[in-house]
Image (cartoon, rainbow over all chains, first blue to last red; front, side, top):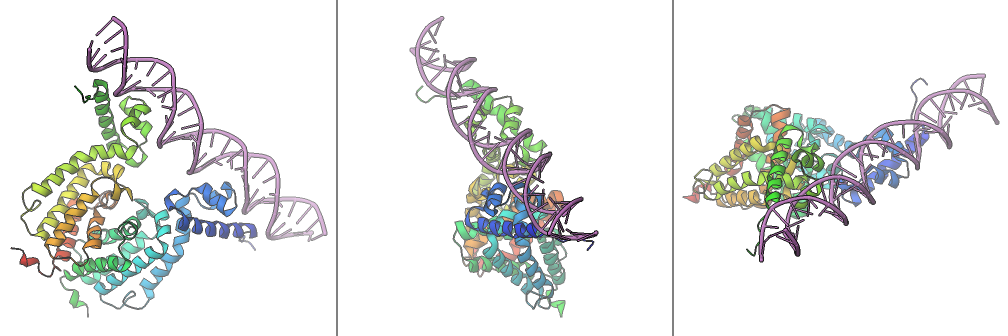
Length: 197
Length: 197
DNA sequence: GAATAAGCGGACGCGAAGTCCGCTTGCTGT
DNA sequence: ACAGCAAGCGGACTTCGCGTCCGCTTATTC
C-alpha cells in the first residue's frame, strides 16, 4: 500500500497513553498533571508521548473530542428540541442542558483542555458559537448577535461550572434551571420570535 | 514608636515594584510575565520581590485592588443607578456597564490576576457575588439565586471580555448592550419586581 | 557613632518543558 | 525465512521559572 498505516506498536502506545491519561485526569487535579506523569503512567518514554501530543492540553482535547463530536452530531441532525425543528428558545434550553451533561461527565477533561483563554482556540468553541448564533438568528435577535453569543456561552466555561458544582455544591439540575432562566429571558426579548411558523 | 513603620528603602522598593509591574503587564502579554521579569524591571532582587508578593498574581492583585475598591464603594454608597435607590434591573445594568469599564481600563491586570479558576478565590469575586445576589433578592428572584449569580457573572471573566474586544473586535458599547439585554431578560422574569416601590 | 534588626539580593536546588539522537522493532520485498 | 529500512521509541540533556536560603547592607534608634 502506498499510504502507510500506523505501526502496531504505535497504535498500542496510542491507546496506552489515552487510557492512562483519562485515568490520571479523573483521579488527580487535572491542572497538576504533567507530561512526565502521563508518560510514566502509560509506560512509554517522553519522546514517544511528545511525538503525538505537543502538550498536556492536546492529550485532553483528544479525549474530549469524541464526546464533543457526538453532541455536535445531535445538534445538527438529532431530534428536537436539541436538533432542528423546535423553536430557538427551546433549542437553546436543550443545548444548555446537554452541555451541562457534558461538563458533569467529562469535567475533568474539560478542565485539562479548555481552561482560561485556551477555551476559545482549542476544541469546539467555534462550533458552539456558530450554533448559538444560528439560534439567535432564528429568533430574530440580530442586534447584539456578535457579543451575545459569547455572553451566553460564558457560563459554560469549565471552571465556572466546576466552581458551582464542587465548591458551592449546587446540583446539576439547579445550574441548568438557572441557565434556562437566562435563555428564556433573552429569547423572550426577540421582536418576532413567533413569526417562525 | 511601638509599631514600626515601613523602612524608607522598603517603601521605595514597593513603589518601584508596583510601577514596574504595571508597566510590564500593560506592555507585554500578562500571562508571560515572570517574577524575575518584574524584579529585573524594578531593579530589585528576587528575594526582595518575594518578601512582599508570593507570586505574580499577588502583584497584579495589589495593582487591581485599588480600582476594584473604588467600584465597590460606588456600589455601596454611590448614586443610583449604580448605588442604592434604583430598581434592581437598572442597578444590574449599571453594574455591567461599570465592570466593562473596569475591564477595558485594567484588563491587562485582570488577565494577570484573575484568569481561570483563580478568579473565584483571588480578588473581589465574593463581593460581586454578594452584590448581584442582593439585586436578585430585591427583584424577588429567589428561585435560582445561588446558581444564577455565577451565571450572570460569567461573561465578566477577563478572558471572555478580552476575547470579545481583542480577538473578535467588538466594541465596549456592543458588549455592554449584550450584557444589558441579558440583565433585562432575567430581571423581567421577576414575579413581583414592581412590588418594590 | 555603635548596636540592632529589618530589609536586601543573588546563588542555588528543584521540577517540568521540550529536544535530540542512538537504538529497537515492525513491516516489506525477495 | 531473512535482510534492509525507516518509523517509532525512550531517556539523557538543556533550558527556564519557581521559590528558598542566608550572608551582607543599611535605615533607625539611643
